[in-house]
Image 1 (cartoon, rainbow, N blue to C red):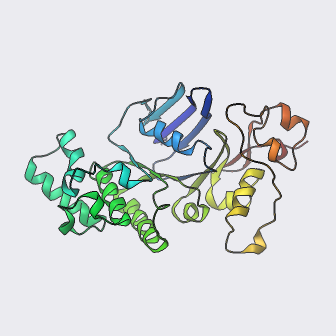
Image 2: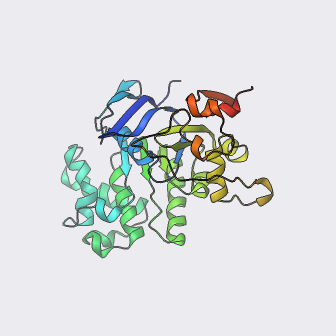
Image 3: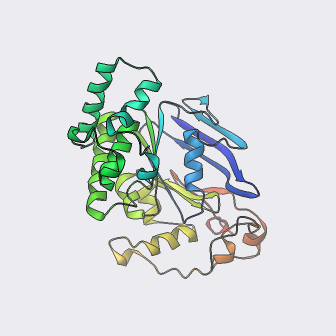
Length: 304
């Protein structure tokens, strides 16, 4: 079977800054992919390109084999990090959730109203809140309304951009549990953008690590987390400890994130990497296979 989504060597720039610089990846029809990295690594820009909100200057994005560069697609939906900013403050909950059905002219008014109520119940929002405005809801309720807006269009792929980062721990855990249930119930594919590796481990089957606009390591979550190869991946894991500290090694990585106005030559991580040599400083590393479904762009992964 073919891939549900293919991203092929896409580039997106803001002026002179290449926020996404030659990224390629593929998602099968049962994947959940976590995108992780520091702020400014390009995660959210990549998500917006896939969602059709941004048009890459180079490269191709294919959904079910069809080119969709810069086009909104009903089956691909995006849940933003800031639900308060994402929801129109002048619209009530019912109108917010119904809006997509009206745009796509999917049903008459009575059927739409039934669908809205059913969807709100699915995501755990009391139908009694139908007449509320966004500012009258809690953060968790707003995020569930935002989720209902996407699910009501029956998407296959949902891009979730830091969906629990603004929520308290208990509310966030409840939302993650809901997302896991919805994935199974609605046969969904997720791209989960996060800085929290513990959340990615819980919700995703695969993970892609981004640094300075590029993917530096990608593979099955358990393989990458148990045997990280790229020093940047090791840095992220050290910053977010796994439950068993015996399985971790302290990695001493210096410096600040790369300046995208003047990115380093060779491997972009080399100014911060304790193992960098002249080859790392001069030559961009190709991807190499570590094991099945685990690849890394690092010269140190290649036998000398």
